Amino acid sequence: MPCRIRDAGGVSILDVEGNLDINSSDIIETIGWLIDSNKLHILCNMEGVDMVDYNGLSILAIAYKNVINHKGKLKFMSVPLQVMELFKVVRLDMVFECYFNETTAITSFSIEEDSRRSPLRRRFQRLDIHLKVAYSLMSDIRTSNVFTGDVLNISGAGLFISTRDIFPINSPLLLTLKLSSEARPISALGRVMWLPDEEIQPHSYPGMGVAFTRLDNDVESAIVDFVEKNVSHRAEEA
Image 1 (tube, rainbow, N blue to C red):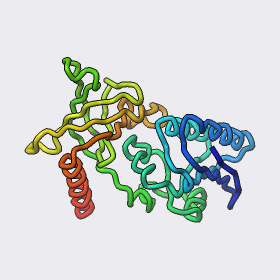
Image 2: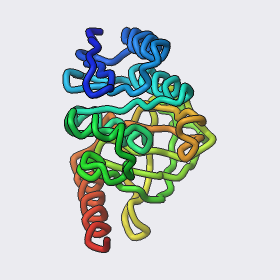
Image 3: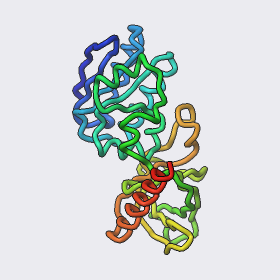
């Protein structure tokens, strides 16, 4: 995929364009070259990114871990909304530092701050919650192979399940959960998008990030309303 390197304020900026997928491994090589050149403050500009799939997520995680292991910093800026939503589903928004613009991002390398106060993190809020979910492979729905796990976060895009009963990436799942003790169970179809790395996501390991692939209109409305209501309520309490 197209990418170029430039320097600003002692930070190496990697401008990435197009799709982040299985054909994007050159990002790992480029960041490896920066590390070998002792350029350890790296900013990934994602303004030109159109799409990120599970292979792209793996590439970003590998690159991030490589930088961290060499005592460097890898941050992100101008992350498209749909990509930020995916980061939330797989809980990488708790790992990656993301910024709206280049000036703020570059400044962050020299100013230690609480990343939870980043303007981008406030805007793209994730509803952290504990709910029970039952799930099974679509191929097993007529059998008794039903597993249970804990939902750690949910949005209109998907949810993260804390569980040891995990399935490979891209596995289609049938999900059943209740948004509250009084609510009726709802069902949704999803696909495994991410299996967290224990080293960079110990707070999420083991588990699965699952993106919704099909929601009935009433189910989608129920989830979105539930998330918005609880996010607003917590904001008022704070």
